[in-house]
View: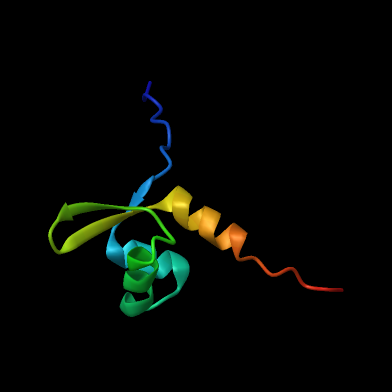
Length: 68
């Protein structure tokens, strides 16, 4: 009998993952970071990882609903 492994939701995204998730450029990601629009953690002086929950909150906050 094989043991089942639970799927764990990813909380932190690499820069490439964050850009893909947002569909944005490196420059926009850096601007969102520098303007404190999304949360991040500095792994080193030049490498940051991004909080996926913070990105989701940013997207929800900036949602423009369609008028039907």
